[in-house]
Length: 432
Image 1 (cartoon, rainbow, N blue to C red):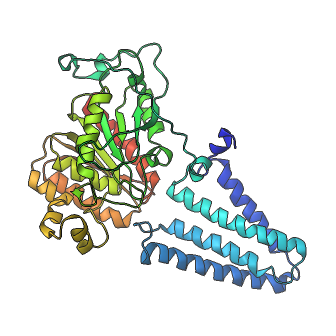
Image 2 (image 1 turned 135 degrees about the horizontal axis):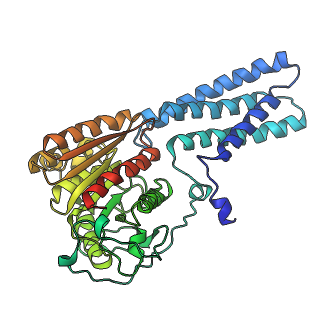
Image 3 (image 1 turned 90 degrees about the vertical axis):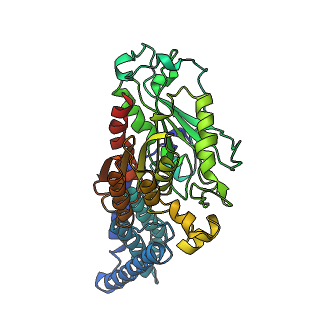
């Protein structure tokens, strides 16, 4: 399969429109079975029954089983209903139909299911391309630039004023996998992803600020590239700022897509030490970054957002800025009693001490920290947490921005909005 086919856009462009149009044409063809007055009501009843099944399935997945940890949006539920409703319409017209109608009707079952899936994907932006949907990852191993030495005494106060882009500055940055071993934590992490902006790829590159960014759970570091469009967003930022952008490191805080060590050190894994010691030591030794503190930020989405506020407050002085995109009110591993038992040795006091609200209160005032909180307008479940944590951050003295992504929910469109709108705020602080 060619790379061009892998790059086929699934959520934007002509492809979704073509799928919807084809489904509509087939629906009309199926609706013309004669006598229409006899068969159309039967098919409509089949569609109604299918739509009901789709809504029940969406309700079970979202509200009963909580399969994804988030509530499905009304748009996603609608696509569940339309997809299964189309299947019901097709099946209802198969009884004693001519051979060609059986073939078309049977094929349309797949088409209607696919159209529903495309609609859901357009809403949540999980798979932007065919390659991402098929699990074909275009990210390769990153070749790190040669080590460069810039004495701390020579670091300028404002890169925007001191940096002069060379003629050979690349138009875009580069992204790739690296291995960051759990030397101190012994945490079994998967490969991390690193983004190097254009300014980091030339001879005499300046030391740059660093953003440690975490994906959600379930998931992995590559999701921020394939679904979050992180690299392309940062490339656009760099293009407007003479190649300057932060170096971004996306480590694995989970160990496996379905695990959740909650960014604390426990029997579930020393995730906190991995992210704040092993990863940061690796960054300092392998990447041309500015000193930690005001020049470093930590951020993340969903579970990763919760981690960002936990680690950004607990390990004070390491990160000067926090980007919490739709994070939670507290880390969780099942119910609260199950969370306390699994990671906090049965101690409710230790659990509460690890929550963002407690960490913010215990470390106040946070006059040296920038906090950026992002939530989707339609993310009712996580919106409550985002509001509570952001207000607590502001009350604790943090310079706080609460950004609302219009028309999105707990999805990758919110992540894209969050990275895109946070970059100017972080860039201002970093002198980019």
